[in-house]
Image (cartoon, rainbow, N blue to C red; front, side):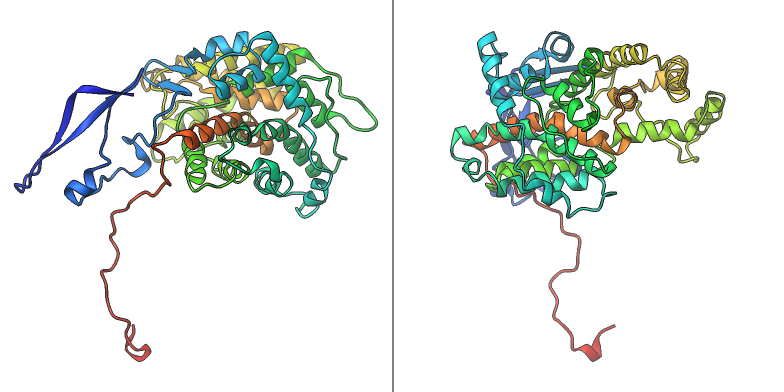
Length: 432
């Protein structure tokens, strides 16, 4: 970042001296006012619930322009990466800043492949969970537990440990094990000759009595889902990972914290919510009634999977996911499936309705990814687990960047206290 030519001046109506703050500008996006000396100079804090106007760090990993509908990983548009690169190439880019050469890609893939198996004792760890436990509860526990097995990856001052390749390699295995445990099937070991996404589908859907037949269209669809969700700037879960990491916690603990945050329905659970919404609508003939309820502010009914807090225009990932959605439906012959027919009809109705168009409530990536994952055979309860599998590389890249930043300190937000001022404790017979 560089210092801007102008400065910000804070003045007070009570006659207190005004204070100047430097302004910094990055390579793209809004300039920021450096208020680190605000408390020392004025005795005051800023008040910004939800960090709506606060830049908590500087980063060179991901950039979003919500007004333009632009998403860049290390400067590359997501539209180009999703078409021209596979997920592991994207992982390499996020971790290292540049796309890999052919030799670098081969070496990186080999390194990830060598670490896909988990310690055999992890299966006993799984037995401590109920079979019907939510997959995210299982993932929070098992990912955090990895730190008890891999003591050679806990020194965050060692740059080699900060690569955290094990997490990228083992998340598909743990997600697949979570699914298998839930449905009562035996765990399936990874196969080194398969690609990252093909290996995951093998571990999900193979059984000892029947090998899963790899379908390139479906594998490519999953790979694209992972690429589109790999990172998304300073969102809630990424900020959680950074905050946990600022204390010096090991990477396994930090990623487990990110998974816990991602579990929330306002964050990673959006695609599951969109699919559940479709199931509640039921049939195509009930769409007009549902749309009318959505428009009625008093109904409490929301149109899930449309619009986005960051993107004020079209979500750039949604167009790619829409193409993938149709590819998968064509491959599996599911265009006449009632649920998918309902989804496509709702999409068309919403895109033609002035109420939604004027409010820029376009289908987002969650609307389409939920449909695709359902078509792939992934249960809705596991959607957020797939999200966590994709986002792990982004979390690691952000965490590693934070650890390497000489300006970074342990996170310690302030508050505006509105509770009772200091008071004495009364005797028990004088309370109430």
